[in-house]
Image (cartoon, rainbow, N blue to C red; front, side, top):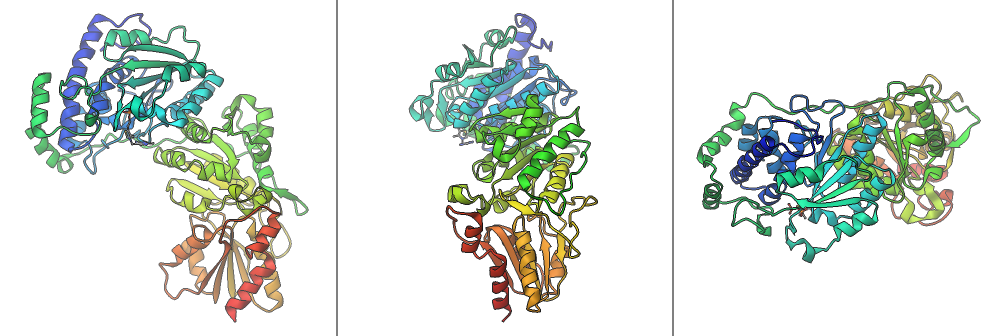
Length: 638
Ligand SMILES: Cc1ncc(C[n+]2csc(CCOP(=O)(O)OP(=O)(O)O)c2C)c(N)n1
């Protein structure tokens, strides 16, 4: 089929006819696919169908080279319309249509119930509604930063637009002038529970226009009209196309019925629908093939994730023995140094109105074109910045811990599923935040991030380790979450008084740092409590209790080597500025659970919400001062 790249002023007659036929066959396939799986979403698949067919047949994408550089991005936000997407992509030869048809939603198949980006032609795994526009914007700014002049297309459901994150996304697109962005809403006026206007009315035109968008209305099933509306020539603003459609379009008893949003047709209904569509009913044959699908399958069209990294880690900064600084300042300095060392690959850095506190202000001043001020729009930022990394950019987002993690967990989860390469630097973690009080004490981040298998969590002990951890994150693949407090810390030293993390130190993910030797008790500490643990060991030494101290910078990756070492002690004590139920102590308990004859474990840390006050006073209130740690240990040994 001729591909116009939306340059010709009208859809050629012959192309319109071919697309019409493609959609006709696809309608039948949507129904067969969902009925074979006895689940799925036929209604919206049928209303979005012409939009999908137009985009993948006419935009600048290539079924033979789905990862072609400079391609247009087509992001489908309402991932439940997978039967529609698969029917179109299969017909256009992005992958084998027949395979999608017979194996949809079958355990072990490539074709899951919601679209996934491991499939050729699909840019984003989606299904958590309301995140597609943010994700596409992230890809758009990454492409623009890489000098690519393409078009970013996003398709979404109308009910989906009740979601608040979309308001954040449209403001951002307007502020940053994404004039190559088109957002198409499948306006079928229905969602699961009925009419969108009854469930939660949204004045889409007014809201988008108020945010500075151009709004166009068209018939979402009339191919020629749709094509004309989609032509991007002369576009000066981000555009919304309200494409009027009919849920269940093409089958009379399904049309405009919310019940068919997410219900497959039963055998007799399918027969009736296929007859009306005049599509061959071969469902029995297909059902047999489905039964034997996994046995007979020889290939998979799954593509592996590709990670874009910074090549040069720059020159590490070593902070000397007399240095007393906060980890966040070390992070800010490392960021600028990394950018300086990679002039062709400067990262994108995102801020939610806290650059001064999270120490990205110096980067913003030096690299304003790579710094994005997103305001208090954390949900949009977490998705956008994460998904910018799917388009060949390294992205950092720095925010206070409670906003970088707790506020945006679901966005990180979708990033995790999409195998992004996102670097999140959370400052102001723990009671260390002090006077701002409990709403700002981020004390559950280890547990939350442990729940995301594709995020690595790093909690550096001092500014030197922070510097190396940031460089490690930038130059290694996959998501990374680096957590730090607010206060100034002394640098960690060896027993001989020299720097522990000296100029020869290289960060190794998962390696425990053996700060002090000892034989009776082992203290395992994390982040700002490392120094307190070392001081506790000194106190215990006076009373002839030989105390080993380890620092754990990777609390979700406890090594077997450490666990084997711990088995030789009389007592194991964990110390953390974090909730003991979900943090380091919990991680050590979990890791010890596979061993036999384990020594008793005592977890010292945050056991209840803190309050406003000086951080040191808050530590005292939760038994985290060196003297208190030593006292607890003496008590446990007696
Ligand atoms: C964040 C989120 N909340 C709820 C759901 C469950 N859900 C799936 S589809 C849907 C309705 C979507 O309506 P619309 O966007 O109009 O799509 P259509 O019905 O046209 O397919 C809901 C609530 C979800 N997938 N994501």
